[in-house]
Image 1: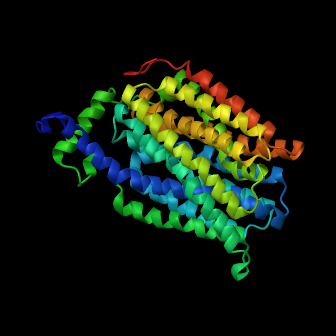
Image 2: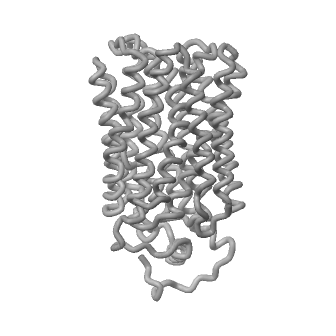
Image 3: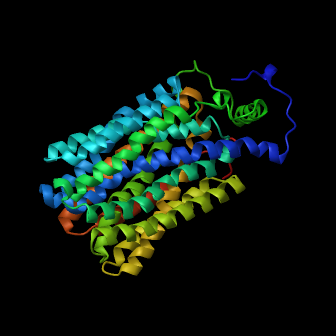
Length: 436
């Protein structure tokens, strides 16, 4: 950290005020996005593997949903310790360790034989990945003040729909083209091939990622000082000795419940999108993969435009409420058009735009209420509660589908949680610089 007495005099213009943030965005966000694309591929490729893996291994829909959800149980248990460790040792070592571990575990799915193998690896994958997402959200608060954070977080979270945009066609191609190659089924090649980027990027992080602006050799002294001045003006300096009282406060509880609703929508759509596309009448893994890319592309545009509007107006609450309601409408509408590819696709595009924009906008909020070690623990706890939804959502939708022979009930329940999230967002108190 640069002390106040050591800071150089800075003549601040609009250009000099923005220059270090442009540098930081170009240096950090593409790498972090690539890492999260790899993470999300490894997290949700099980949705594409499901198209053939269940028949090969004799798994039921409920067993798949339970195993898919177990990822989030491991995630829940290890997320807060991982974020607290990152606060102590830095992002570079923490994120590299996470990526290499999850790449190895994801590749091991190629050798699953029984339901218990599947359950164990899904739990271990969640434990390995725990801390990556909340760690990055915390890491971005070290570089960008709140007034600049919506667009940056949205750019990073674009990795989720981008993973779908890339992963859908890629996964469909692997399933279609590698069937029985070298004695392995297509779903086995899917897990092996899509694990490689995580392993490579885990090593790249060790070389390319800086823990803080103070350690960035690509920033000038003036630029470092400007960023640190902006961050100090953003919030009161955190107390490292104040304990973790903030993480058990009412605001953390409220944010955690909203995170649960947000995650119900995101994962309800992510895990079941290939099935919903197939249910609409699209046949074959390659075609399903190509069609599934369209809602993710729409989601990227929606996220970036809404985040830009939120930053420009310095308004968070009602942008988030609106996005919750858009996602709820799209999910509900998707139940009305079974067998109609065009109408189903439009509804799923609306659902994806709403659900993923909610994810981007929601994660701007916790750092507005928490700082320092309380932010490290609080963000992890909030995301851990969201991870419980990641367990509940695929298992519940799988059980409903197996019981009713339709995903409609699951999508309607998911829509209801999005509406609840919108209602709870209106209860948030005003934060420093916030508007109602």
